[in-house]
Structures are given as structure tokens and as C-alpha cells.
Length: 363
Image (cartoon, rainbow, N blue to C red; front, side):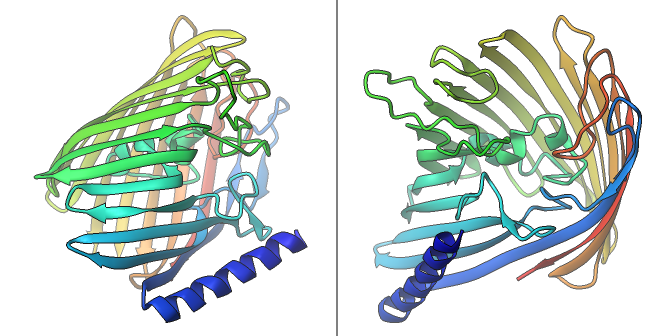
């Protein structure tokens, strides 16, 4: 850990020195978000717990460095280094990576943006405007933990916007080099000689988006390899998600939703499911916004389904500081054990209720 800290300090100093010499535009930014929750039925005995969550409150905490240099002719070089933080303990996120949220360098011009490195992929981008709760503690990320963690190591990505038509894709030669566990670290480094499919990942996006309304669709398939998590222990195993998303402004508010069709071909067998979600966001005053969302996971050929209903109120003291509170309920059917809170637990087949509150500050 000491070596990691020393490396981070040295890197930050280097960034600062480079900015001074090259006159590049370098921005330091961040977000700190922490709160407290109480949820029921966290185990088979039906116990409740009060705790400070690690993964997120209303948004995951992070610190980042973003820079650009104008190369002339409308072309710029860009970079992003973004580290995830767990405010409750001060540890790093995304499988203990130094810059686990993003670590990219690329070129930006009239053609769009090309990035190389660890980056958010098209599944993440496709749902940004249609998921009104985002990476909230109580949200659809609790049902499918990949959605707010849709990032790829060793990836080259492209994103362009042409007269409101949005086109994007990523290709990863080794989607996840960390074996620390969890949805952000699944131990599939890839780049295996003689096995071109090992830990490969391809994502794509096509849509039409305006401030008033938008629709898009995305495709995401990732392959496994020996030692990878979630039963994807062979390059013949795969996890595929196809999404369709939409949003529309209604007065000052927004109605948005979509569907995620998922097919997992793991060592344990074939699993297919659909995740439907619909949400509303409305600023009831210039300082207060109410968000609500319904979601349902339908596992095909199984009764192990889950239905979620959540709501959140956010009060803005300023553009950078807000407090929030939320409530939620997750109804599990059959042997389903989907927790209401991201990273939480619930007794199999038990419904779970929760309340949460916190504070968020950006800089």
C-alpha cells in the first residue's frame, strides 16, 4: 500500500510539472458522497442492519484528473485518470485499482473521440440518460451490478455525435485484469497466445438523442477464460446484454426507461433474463428534485424473479453540495436473493425494505 501511495504522489507531481511546462489544460475534480442506510431481512433469520455503505450513496465517490492539449486543426489530445474511493473506510474502489474508474488517453476532433485504456463502455453510456436513479444505493444496479460498473480494461473506444445521431463502440483485448472480486474486478486479464476469444469484450451503441427526447440501443458481449468470475471459466463462456433505452422531457420533468436482455452461457449452464425499468424525475422546486423508479427482473423459465420500487428526494444547498434521502422495496419471488442495496445481502425469497440518507459534494 505504501508503494501505491508513493506512486500516486509521484504521478500527481509529474502531472503538475507537465502542465506547467506544456501549458496544457489540466483539471482536478472529484465527488465525495456518503450516508447511512437501514435495511431489513439481510439474512435467512430476517435480521435488520444499520450501516454506512461502501459502494455508493447517490453517486460513487471519486477523484480525477482530466487534461487536454490543442494540437491545431480542430484536433486535441485528451486524457482522464479517475480513482474510485470508499468514503466509509478511505480505501480504493474497482478492485483496489489506483485509477479504477478511468485511465485513458486519446484524440478528439470533428470525427469524434478515440480513447485507449481502461474506460467506460457503451452499456454504461447507453443508460446514462434513461436511468433516472443512476448509480444510487437503491437502483437497478442492485439487480444487475454490472450496469453501473460497465468498464473495460485494455480497450480501444470510439464515440461520435453527428446531427444528434450517436455512434460508439469499444473493443477489449482483456476486459478485466483485477482478480480482487466483485462486479468491478472479475479476474479475466485475457491477451492469451493462441486463444483470441479469451476475455475479449465488444460493445456497441447507436442512438438519436436531443435535449427533449432520445432513444438508443446497445450491444455488449464479454467472454471468459480460466479463473474468471461468475462461472465464465472458459473462452467458450459468454455474458451478453442487449439494451433498448428511451427518455422524454415532460415540462420540467423527465420520463425514462428501458429493457436489458441478458443471456449468460456459463459453466453452470444457460441463464436468460429481461430487466425492465421505468422512472420519473421532477424538480418540484429550484432546489429540490424527486426521482422514482420501478424495475422488474424476469428470469426466463424460472419463478426466481425480483421487483423493485424506489424513490429519492434531493435538496441542493448549491450547485456542488446536496443532501438526499431515499426509500425502497425489493420483492423477491421463489429463490431469488436480490438485495435492495448495492453490494448488500438478503435472505433467499425474502422481500427487503430500506431507508437511506446522505450528503454529496463535488469539486
